Image 1 (tube, one colour):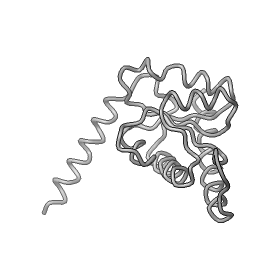
Image 2 (image 1 turned 90 degrees about the horizontal axis):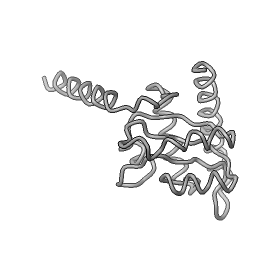
Image 3 (image 1 turned 45 degrees about the vertical axis):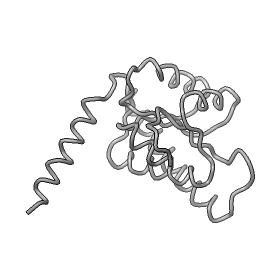
Length: 155
């Protein structure tokens, strides 16, 4: 009964997300990669291996930290993040766009919409448990290979 209305509403939300995308949002993660990427962000957030926001991400990249940069595609004004992909390319850091800044914030455990996050390979302070580190490394390598494949098909 109500399932038709729900699917219609979710399709409408998805369409609005895609309409709000910036023209520079390439390479854009598909549904499967987006889900995997947000899962990685969630796990990195729990492990304290995450830098949130443009200022923190840029500072971390300039200091030489390595990881994967995930950028929201629906940022307005787009000028706020246009320099981040260039920094990533110079530092040889893979980056990918996801459609929604709200989804990125939810995965990163913040209430405020987030423009970009940097998933680090190891935490800034302390050490991770062996099992936790193994799970994070596994997710990280999976997303990194998918992003590399997506990027190579783009250019």
